[in-house]
Amino acid sequence: MTRRKNAEEELRSNQSKLEQRVAERTQSLRENEEYLASIVQTVRESLVVLFPDYKVIFVNDHFKRTFKVSREETEGRSLFDLGNGQSDIAELRRLLEQILPTNNPVIDFEVSHDFPHIGKKFSPCEVGGFDFPYCYEINGL
Image 1 (tube, rainbow, N blue to C red):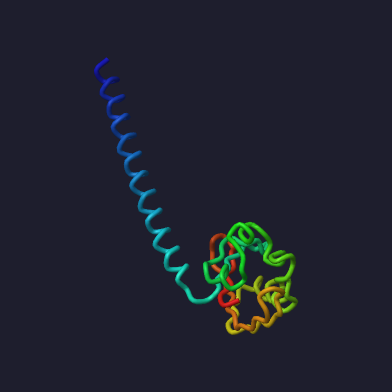
Image 2: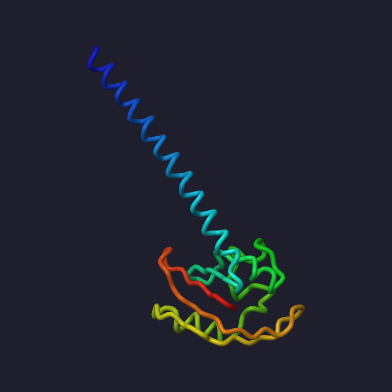
């Protein structure tokens, strides 16, 4: 009976240690995520992160200010549906649909569009892929 009690106690102890390690790691990941988010939010260019189906995962504060949108209006929606379809720009769509699947980054791709309510925007943008899994980022739009 003593062996069984010792084994049960050891199992409880190991489980407790494992739970503590998981809690510490989770806290560390949260802190790292907050730190990285604070860096991304201070970027002075619009940043959009997309899933391969062009659904928006994330937009930074500069994007929201520039295009006068909220996170709720952008995240989880198709890039091409934003602003009642205003962001369905032919050159950008071609870039995303034809060039990105090759996994070749695009630098200084020029996008010019006249958006209702915010006016004409002209910007070089950079588009690149990264593994999260299979996401794209658009910087500078």
